[in-house]
Image (cartoon, rainbow over all chains, first blue to last red; front, side, top):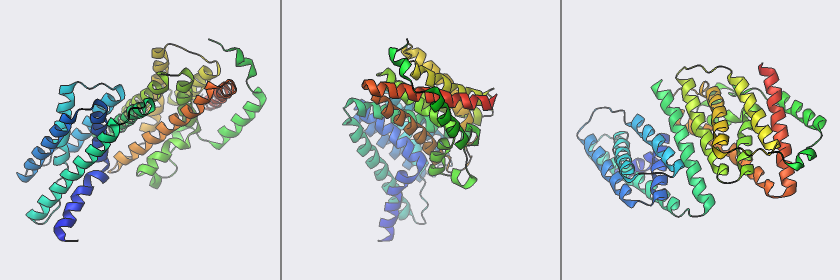
Length: 168
Length: 205
């Protein structure tokens, strides 16, 4: 595998194996699927792009991971309650996209490697979001809808515990 | 509300013997971490709630009671519990003391077990409040033991998932209440859960 392709793949895998990213992406995907609002997906992608632009402009370290977990907690509660006002859902999608990008700075030597990693991360995050949201959108049976809500409560509970540890 | 089948509950002597064995085999909720190395990641978090019998029976009781009450309690109680439990855990992590945690945990098994055994059907809000109140104690006990570190996310996810799966196992068992014989079995399980709670309460006070 060529060096550039390898860094792309590493970037693709990164949001799928980083627990905080998985948790937040799952929360947003469940909400998107539950509410069937594809516009939020677009807003997330725009937020992601904005975050990557900030990385390219060499933004200093940010509390992005804390923001991600806080968003996951709120989104988890919203999924559990099956309640999502459109403006709030859009705002959280934008925040999560930006925060996820800012929390994924590439560890690359060359500029080309850095861009390949960022492109991989963007694609990996969007792919996971799309797949899980599609599955959640097709969860129409009663027990499936309840399963989505229960998953939302688990995500919120996990995020609250982690936030408490970090804020201690 | 009492159910006429209440008189069919298993012989108290047999149930007491089973409970005594279970309590001897399990430790209280304050002794969940088996060793430090196991508590680092997802598996450590997953195993964490499974090593305290008092916690396990209460988690199962939440699902069991939810299934016994039927919709919407069947999903509302298992959603309420982890959310409030996490708040209890956060309180502990932030260093806020809650008095009588072990007594609260033992009482949760007694009360929830009794609710199932007596086929109690309080209003939905009342049931959710009962579950939420006890969730604070369970969360506090576990939150005090959460290991700080880089893998705390995986640990917390494992911990919450294990707790949720205990709820689901209770729901699965509770669905037997659709049939008359299953209903008796579920209520007998409620008696067992309450007796386990009583045994832990006697150790806690």
